[in-house]
Structure formats: structure tokens, C-alpha cells
Length: 353
Ligand SMILES: NC(=O)c1ccc[n+]([C@@H]2O[C@H](COP(=O)([O-])OP(=O)(O)OC[C@H]3O[C@@H](n4cnc5c(N)ncnc54)[C@H](O)[C@@H]3O)[C@@H](O)[C@H]2O)c1
Image (cartoon, rainbow, N blue to C red; front, side, top):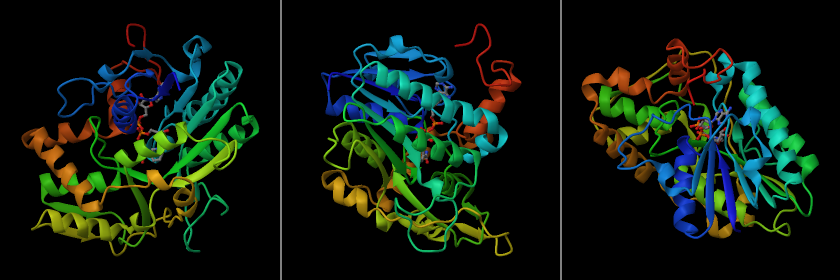
């Protein structure tokens, strides 16, 4: 491995992966490619995560040029409109950015001689299931534009993989944990922030839906595994659930775990809520068997403590609504649009990035 390109590096997960890879591979050329929607959404950092890169490229993945692939042997593709609320608001764009651009990028990468392509997929492809933990052979049931974009991307990537072009689709559990670009539109992160600031957790459902979680640090370890994966470990094309069996939680269990760490909380469950459409347990046996040395290491208590400490250190309690909204992706995009910085199709206007 000589040169890695990581798209979407300026996001919640990418900012942590960059730090991990730089530490693990001090001599490898590490380049980032991002459109910078959330470049300003930083917390508690003495320096930009991008300082660990050799080169930061600013650009729209929809117009990705193969000149950025010169000499690249390993491509980690994270760039995406990356949650359900954004997908519901920008359905067509989600397909364009997440699926069509992935297809184009992978084709360009194959032509350019990239050896390994790692795709950030999601366990949300399982949507809703009451039939036990979902494994990679289970039927997918994507309920949102975001989840559909991941399913379609996996399908097209399968057709491109070969002995020279090794593809790994990591179906990540829902992310949580501290990052220089923290997000509060994720269930555990939201609970911890509400507990620290408001001293209460409001669960929108009755608390029974299942959510498998993974700490961002463990996501970085999984990417590290995937970029080193040989085809005799799982094949030239691999789809694998990434997480840990013991991190399948019901939503109310997450609220209770936060309450153990941050006492005197008021937890309200909505007993009369409509059933949550998204609920699934996930089976991680395949990841356990293929990636024994890269299994998730974090425990829930540590993840909650790190989140609490990070949110405490932000010190924005007096202006929390403003602080909170810049940690919620859809709010950030809408703010950039309201200020006239982004067009309706989420392109930076002239003079922007
Ligand atoms: N966070 C999770 O729970 C989770 C779980 C499973 C999978 N994933 C996947 O992991 C990846 C990273 O997730 P994240 O939580 O860091 O998301 P994020 O929204 O924090 O980061 C995504 C990054 O992609 C960039 N991006 C978006 N559109 C772009 C475009 N047109 N051109 C170039 N860059 C663009 C954004 O600027 C941002 O920096 C995504 O593909 C996501 O779908 C995330």
C-alpha cells in the first residue's frame, strides 16, 4: 500500500478514520476528497483533522475526475448524503450522490488500476425485521432513500469486482462515539447530549426497537482491516456486517445506560408512539470469522463517557440550541442553503468551495 484516497474524509467518521490511518501508516500517502459541507462543524480540536493528510482535495463527488486517482492503490469511499432525514428531504440527490457517483467512481478506479475499494455501506439496508438477527444472506428491506442508495451501490459494485479489483462493502451498524466532527443526529450521541445539557432524554418511540451500534473508533479499525484484506479472505467481492453481537441494543437500554453514567435524569418513553419502522438485530458472525484481529474493542460505558467529556468540554450550554444545530447534518445543509451558499441541488455557489 503506497497511496490511499479517502472520500468523505471531512465527515463524522472520516475525521476519525484519517487519524487512525495516519497513526497506523505514517509513511503512506494519504489524500482526502470532500465537498466540505461540514468542514466548520468541529469541536474541541487544536488542529484540523485534515492536517494529518498529505493532501486535501475539495470537490463534488458527482464531478470526480480520475486525475485524483493517479498512483492510488487503495480507495476508501465514504462521501455520501448520509442519513435518513437528509435522504427524506433530498431523495433524488441522495440517489445521485450516493449511488450514481459510487458507480462512476468505482468504474474510474478500476480503469485507473486501483487495487482495493472499500465502500461504507450500512446495516440500515435491513430496515425492519422481527425474524432474528440479520446476516449477509438475509433479504434486504431498505425503507428509505438512504438505505436504497446503499443497496443499489452494493449491487453495482458486485459486478465490478475482480481478482485485480478487490471490493469490500462494510455494512456498518449505527455509528456512535466521539469525533472531532461530532454528530447529534445519531441515537446514542443525541441521548448523551440531551442528558448532559437538558438533564432529560426523550425517546420518540416506546423504546423497544433494536439498534445495533458501533463506535467510530471501531469503524476505523474495520476500514483498516478491509484495506489489507486479501481475496482469499472472503473473496474478490465481500459484503460484511460490521459491529458486535453484544452491541445489539434496544433503544430504551441505551437511554438506561446513559442514565447510569449521568444520574438524575428524566427519561420519557412514548408508549403511544406508532411502531418504529426501523428495527433490526444484526448477526456479526462473518465479521468475527474473517477479521478476528479487528473486532470492536470499545465498551458502551467508555463510549458514553467519552461523549459526555467531549460535550462537557464544548462548554456551550448557554447557547445550546445554536450549538446543537451545528451538530445535526440536515440543519447544517439547510442553514447553508438559507444563507445562499448552497444551491437547491447542494452545490456550492460561485465563490464557495
Ligand atoms: N454514521 C453512521 O451511523 C453510519 C453508519 C453506517 C454507514 N455510514 C456511512 O459512512 C460514511 C460516512 O458517514 P458519516 O457519518 O461520516 O457521514 P457525514 O455526513 O458526517 O460525512 C459525509 C461526508 O461526505 C461529504 N460529501 C457529501 N456529499 C458529497 C459530495 N457530493 N462530494 C464530496 N463529498 C461529499 C460530506 O461533506 C461529509 O464530509 C457514509 O457513506 C455513511 O453512509 C455511516
